Image (spheres, rainbow, N blue to C red):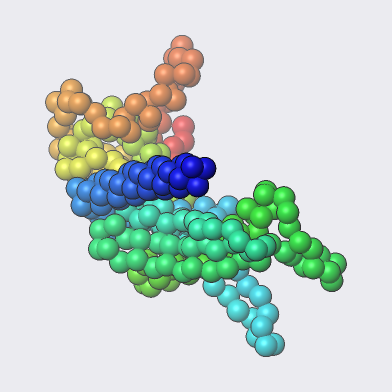
Length: 298
């Protein structure tokens, strides 16, 4: 009688486990379908993705940790670090990447690093084993604390994750990112494009009452999509207005300011609202261009 009861309980447990496993697999499948649907609905703009990557590489904080190097066989080995690889993946868009621990067994973990392009269905994946031990002061120390084990898996997986990401991002984009990081370290790069455009938009508004909406109406798209070419064109217009060679009406539609603004309009005007208004202003600020940069002086 007891044997039959035990068999019945085991069957019930197996059925429950099977239902839970099926529900989990179904949920994961739906999440994957959702990611693919969003990627297909909003595909990446390669030119904008490249511009975002280049702008990020102009930040000194990233440039300083963008490359790794070590000696091997009497030679120096240099390559993109995991930090640069993460920035590439984040700004390239529509990528799923990470490190996943599959199981723990007998003092070791089996983990997986992956990077998946949801648009093209190209996938890089590396499965590896991590021993729950580390070398300290010439001795092998066994790891038992779950936090130490997690950090060991994450550290060992970072190299595999970097390799997966670099296997998905086009090689020429990686080369351009490395080149920009080197320029930033050498002090040869200007401010990121987004900051320069923000400064120009503020100058137009303060000196010529030209709003961001009017500029977006002229160029035909939002400020988030402005490129180096658009920045150069705005500099030329500013020079023309400064020298009196043209008027605001020659370039911009004043009625455009009444239309609905893009997401950046409030961001650029928020700082001006917080400032205390001055009683009077003796001299109007004038844009001055020097070495492809725009500044404002009184």
